[in-house]
Image (cartoon, rainbow, N blue to C red):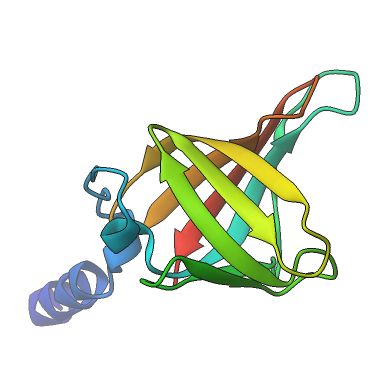
Length: 129
């Protein structure tokens, strides 16, 4: 029985995923932004109290090293982007619209941004794919 307990304990410990490990903070740069980022949580207030909500199969941003991006949702599907201090500016090629986001945190595996045009809370949490 003791042998079974030891094996069971080892299986439990080895099944821990990397998701439980904290992500390392990185500097905001094109190099660290490059890749695919999927929306997994959002904190949006339509005028009342906001809470974090999980997002299943959230939209994906794909940032390339040549300062272009693609998006998997219906508006602003592609364009160019620029980084200025802690601001991410997206210039949409389908409408010439410019969307600006404040980047509050970027790590090796997560990106937290908020739309600068929000009156109420609107924070979006992306995970690197």
